[in-house]
Length: 215
Image (cartoon, rainbow, N blue to C red; front, side, top):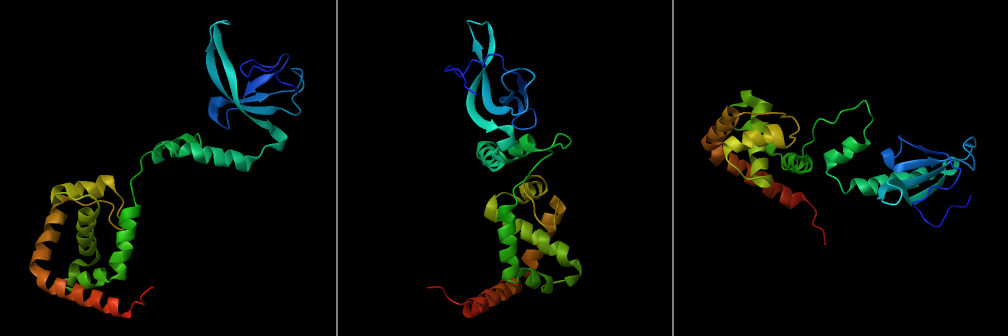
């Protein structure tokens, strides 16, 4: 099939239909030489531009994908992934999600994930559970961890830390917290600071002795 030299002109006697399930309104499905010949349609990435001569918007072909039956779908996936990097993560997800799905929200997770694993690798979670009154258990451990994570990733006051945990970040095991929980955690830290600091120091020093050094 031969196309005209000007990319913004549709080939004569072609049947042009938009393909809505690939890249929205930007992909055209171009049929064969006649309107009845759709056996081997071609796919084009196009952009509508105003044509002052014709007095209407006309599609300008930006890229040709080739025949639909010979489409390189892996190349299309790579193109979509490359374009998605220009968007915010939430926008990229919303633009590629199925029509029956609705994007609600997203929050960062990487920073707290790394700190949580380091927290456990240093056994600080176990130490926190052993110091003071053990009946508070996991909830107290996560409240203390959330304050430490907030100080490391987004330093703020205790009041702001509670809002940060609840709305701005994902802390595994602590979907939400409040001001009172943060104040109780701080009061508990003041009560056990000497014992807690000594245990954490001993644990970290021991791990430093047994971890192999990398050249």
